Image (tube, rainbow, N blue to C red; front, side):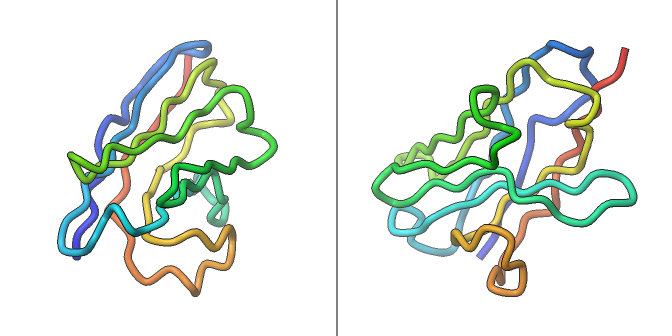
Length: 119
């Protein structure tokens, strides 16, 4: 089982980024997937989850700016991030499952991709 995130980078405030998480080794289409992030010196923060039926859920601070999606033909989950703010600076991780911030319930994580929002 493997998750590999990509798409992070250094962007200016107001910019957009699309993160990708390529999955392998399990039945992706049957699995809920989650994005979480960790800012420097902070704990993990739940960002968004998408279920196998395509239903989506977001943390309040991301609603309207972030969009999670999935492509089961590519075993990939995406996080489109718009109107980025400096406070969005964090390492972004994907994980299998949808347990919000019950971190001990997630047993597989990617290595993360760094997003830095700075002028």
